[in-house]
Amino acid sequence: MKLHYRIFTLFLALFLFASSLSIVPVSANSNAVVDNAVQDTAQYLLKTVQKPEVGSIGGEWAILGLARSSYNVQQSYYDDYYRGVETYVKALNGNLHDKKYTEYSRLVIALTAIGADPSNVSGYNLLTPLGDFDKTIWQGINGPIFALIALDSGNYPIPVNPTAKTQATRDMYIDEILSNQLQDGGFALSGVSADPDITGMALQALSKYQSHPKVKVAIDNAIKLLSRIQDNEGGYASLGVSTSESTVQVLMALCELGIDLHDNRFVKNGNTIVDDLLSFYSKGQGFQHTTDGSGVSGMSTEQAFYGLVNVQRILSGQSSLYRMNDVKLSTSLTQVSSNGLANKSKDIKVMPIIAANPSFSDITNHANKAAIASLASRGIINGLTDNEFAPDQTMTRAEFATIVTKSLGLPIQERATFNDVTASDWYADYVGTAYYYGIVSGTSETTFTPNNTITRQEAAVMITNAAKLSGMDTALSPAETRDMLAQFGDYTQTSEWSRNALAFSYREHLLSQDMLNIEPSTSVTRAEIAEMLYRLLTAAKLIKEAN
Image (cartoon, rainbow, N blue to C red; front, top):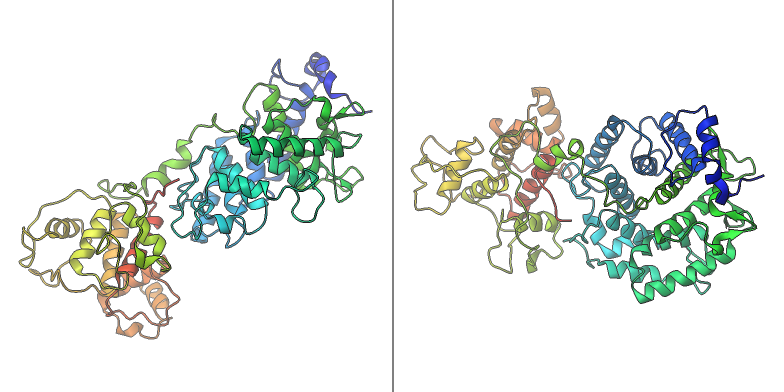
């Protein structure tokens, strides 16, 4: 017979005395059975998820539960996971998915739990996509639900997304969730009947907004529905099948809302919702999906685990699972990403955002809008006027020397090097600085020809020099250079002095490999230069986007 949850604490002394398991000391305010299940399942997860990777199973939910539990997990476990996240994000160029924005939300939640900074993962801000309202809600109610949970987990401000058709706000996500409430008071992915899983998730997202009158009414109606459909075992069924996952999501909602787990509305036939969840538990073997012998699954175990961790935290007087104000930023996970690569010049510094994203009228639908806006918000690049950027105009060698110097935050070096660059020229100090640091060279020993437009191969060389200064490995063997450039029909037209730099730029995706030809002597546009420089700063971990 199932042990009644309300008398668990009476057995505290018995469990401490009789248990042969090695567990952490149990708090006087916690419950021994819950603690034992948490400790045992944590051990099981660490055996079965030895190398967590990005994913809904064996990834973020396991990391979340372990990081928020009382179980002592070695820091190397989280470090290894974070390195895997960096590799994954970089391989996708920060684009985790074109339509499923819960991919971003799930990662933000896990990274916040381990004290990592989701706004700078290999130079990519994983919060920024959540500022795009239309794309976030594309997949249905799941989108705004987990966007709110993710943003609220670290109290992150709504990120400004310069490419969004509709800039999101928290109120917009709240309203989107509320607009999906069904007549029975619940929520579902589709149809007119409430699903306990989705209803529980919606309440988790709305939990921090209970003071809003319309949210309070919606929560009250959903709670009535969940109380009404709870079965006699204390659990919940989805599509007519009682599952641990359904029970967990309602349990999570109660914890996040601050509803007592012994609340009479959620005790049926003497059974609480925790009683029901523990009925799916097998010591040393995780949690089953159903109790009819369906067996343990990764999803059911990971969800049940973080649900029990939430119970453990509530019983011991800690903040709930998703309220992560108690998490401290981990230096071991953020040091490199926040300050650039380890081998960068000591004179390079990350350029902060100093102004709102510009509203250049001529880049609204431009492919390089995000790069232009990011650099402009840091004062690295300017428009030709306050309202126009002129993305398709060319750039001079002097202008390029200026923006690359600014982008790396290099200290000005006043040096008179070229006869055609005088001290009174507005770009003189920037050309001198770029030359001092080996980023640019002259067109001869005494001339720089500052007003010549910069060509694609010249830009590649200068960008590659900046990359080397930033700590990137720019070396390629002759074979690697040849193989990289041979895919382009006009590679033989490139100058010998530019080929290594061009190959590096294509290898690191600073230049797009989608083009049929290199066109090495073609003047590059202001938009192309902005994109190249933005990609360099991203790869060198020198971009930290706004939250």
